[in-house]
Image (cartoon, rainbow, N blue to C red; front, top):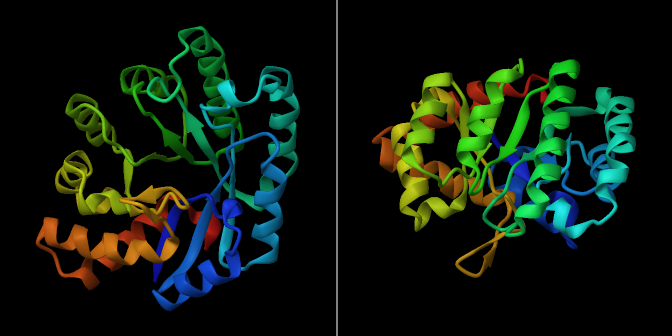
Length: 251
């Protein structure tokens, strides 16, 4: 069984087709990560509508520049997540972004939201699905202050210093279809031990012009197996075990 641990399934217009393609590729479970205050309801809706989709709720770091009201919606968002804790498998997508978010004046609010989301994950005893683009040092400095069951770093492409720190701390790293062309992503797949690797599409993000879909994680698996010089079936079994360990609520 293949599992996509980080996908924005709520953003597809042709979700039925996407899920059929995923199933045909052997992808049987998909974690749909929330991003915005307005999108969390939709994430829950599709997770209840489709048996293969599992909800992860959180506030994406780019929300600070896309939603002027997010600071005032933070408390109600946390209450919404707590109310639906039985229906979610993790807190995500959360984190910090100093790459796509250029306005440094927004960074304090972004950090406050991130810390609130980590506190929520700690209190609810849920794993987290993290975005760390351009803010790797700050994220890695903050994380030890919280007792989180498990941490997944999604699509890591930052400095090797913090990659090594994450490996030392036992974080998991989910690999995207960018492994086909991205040296930093290939490096993550090479350096992280197989017992801490996961698969993700991050769809519908585009890869070389192609819309990312959960079906693509099959290609990611084969790319990883070549880098690791490991039999694809052996690697698939190990990644299944990893996923079961970090996201037990989807099983």
